[in-house]
Length: 147
Image 1 (cartoon, rainbow, N blue to C red):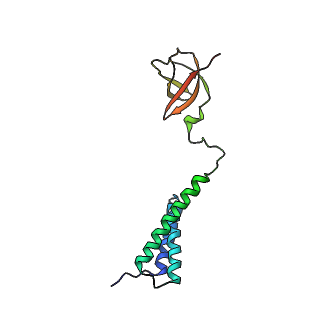
Image 2 (tube, rainbow, N blue to C red):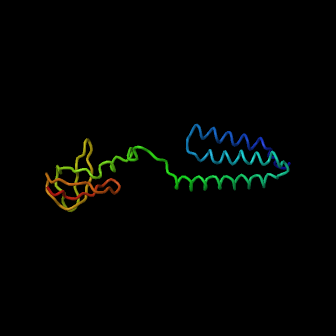
Image 3 (cartoon, one colour):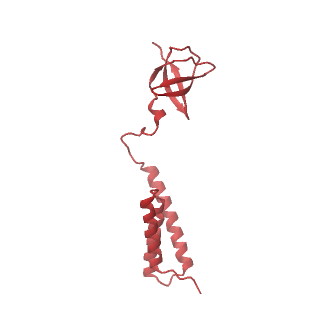
């Protein structure tokens, strides 16, 4: 018995995917769900489409949706009023700190608020004021501040 896919199969698949999107936000299921709904619409108007062509249409629409959204998102990133909210280390760039311990062999540690951070920079004694100029993973690059 040949496989038969009616338009309502695609509509149900699309609604299931959109429901998954509401439960687990990723924006990926929404795009695939929209492709399934459009495929269902095409099958509604052209019921003689075989399941192979339906699957090809669905796959092509899914790929087009994902690629189009990715390009749109890269060109129009979501603006935020606090871009460093979850980037704690980057919030400290530009801040001047007094060293509690010396920087030796280009490496040391500083204490900022309630955290200890690794630093790299020129060797200098404790009590020296340094400015945080960059962050590489979890290590700050610092430079000595002239008084």
